[in-house]
Length: 262
Length: 330
Image 1 (cartoon, helix red, strand yellow):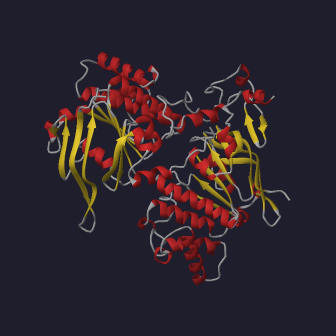
Image 2 (cartoon, helix red, strand yellow):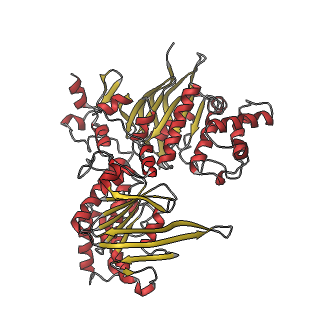
Image 3 (cartoon, one colour):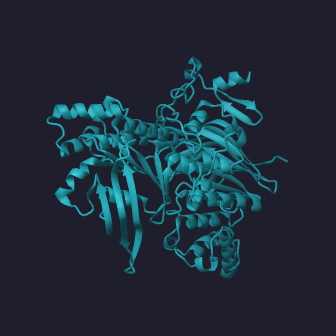
C-alpha cells in the first residue's frame, strides 16, 4: 500500500437544523486521511455520523466548515461543472439493492447509464462489450443483460449495483452498508467479490458498516466513530487485538459471539 | 409428566398464488421444552416466520396449514391449537403465548400512548378490574423491561423513544400477561449491536425470572449462540439439523450448517477470502425429488438427487437430515 493520501477531510463540521431553531451537529470538527489503495472502514452505531461523513467526502452534501481535499485539491467549495471531474472518480454502492436499481430498466441499461453519461464508449457495440465485461467481473451470467432487476435475488441485485459503480473505473468506491441487507451466505459471496475487485482494479474503498466482524474481514484500517467524532483509528488487526478507546471496547464486547469450540 | 410446552408435528404451510399451492413449510417437527429458549435459524424466505405465525394463528389469508401444534399447559391440560376457533385462540394468544415482532418502528400504534397500548392487552384479556390497577401493572412491567422512569414514559408516544426502547415496550406488551411461551421474530435485527446485547440479556432475564420458554427466530448465528439452549436449522421449509446449542457449534454436521457457519466473518480469524455456499436460495414452488440442498451442497452424492434423506440421530439430541451424515454415524 502506498502512503499517498487520496482524500482527506480537514476539520469538517456538518450540522442539520432542528425544529427548535437549534442545529444538531452530526460531524464534529473531524479530520481524516485516506490513503490510495486502502480499504478504510467507518464503524459506529446508527446516528453516529458515518453516512454523513461519506456523503461529505462524495460531496453529495457540503460541509458547514472545513476542507475536503481530493488529491490535494479542496473540493468542499466547488460546485457544478468544477466538481464534475471529481464525480467520475468516486462511485457509491448503496445499502438496499432493491431500491437502488430502477425497476423499469433492463440490466443492460442500468450498467450502461454511467458509460453514456461520461461518454466512455463511442458506439453501441462498445457499450455492449463493456457491459458484458462488467457482468463477467461481478460473476453474473451474460444472459442477465436482458433481464429486469426484479428477476434477480438480493445478492445478484447487489452485484448489478457493484457493476454499475465500477463501470467508469472510479478511483474510490464508497460502500454504504452494502452487505447488511443480505443473508450471511450471500454476504460472504459479495464480500469476497468486493475484496477481489479492489485488488484487481486497485480501488480505494471507503466501507461503512455497523458490523464489526464484516469490517474486520474487509478493511486495512478501521475508524470507530461515536457522536460525530472519531474515537479511534488504527490498523484492523491492532484495533481488534488491543482496542485503546473505551467506546471501541464497549462496541466489541457487545457483539453476540458464536461460541466455537476449537 | 411430559416436559414439553409446545409440540409441533408434521406442520405444513402453503400459500395459494395464481390458483397454485406453493409449499412454504414442508412438514416440520419441533418441540419446545419448558423453561428453555429454542432458536430457529435460517436465511430469508426459508419459512421460519411462517412457522411462528402458524403457532399464533396469524397466517395471511392466502395461507393454509396442516399438521398438529399441541399445547401442553403448565396446569396439565393439553390443547390442539390448529383446531381452535378464533374465540378460543384468543384465550391462548396473549395470556399463554406472547409475541414480539421484528419491527419495533411499525408494530406500535403511533397514535396511542405507550402505557395505554400496553394496558390494552390487560383489558382485552380481562386481567384487571379497573384503570388504576392496569396502570399500576403497566408501570411495574415497563420498569421490569428496563424502561427508565416508567411513570413518565407511560404518557409518551412511540415516536418519542428510541428503537431499543420501543423493542422494550413490545416485550412489555408480550410478557404483561405472564405467558408461558414468548415468540420473538427477529427481535434484534433492526437494532445496533450495543442495544442488541441489552435486549438479548433482557429476554434471557425475563425467561429465567418468569419460568418462561421462548422461541427465537433469527438469521444471526451469534444471537443463537448467546441466547438459546437448543437450535433448529431451517432451509427451504424443512429442518435440516437440530441440536443443543453447544453441540451444534462444536460439531455442525449438515453441509448447510457448516457452510453457514464458515461464511460468517469472524473477529479473531482473518482469512484472505471467506468460505461461501455457492449459488442462491432457490425459489419457492419448485419442488425437488432429492435433498433440498443438493444443488448447493459440497459433498453431494448421486443419491442426494433422487431421494430425500431421513432424519437420523448422530449423537444424543443431535438430529441431521443428510445422507453423508447418516453414513458417518454408522
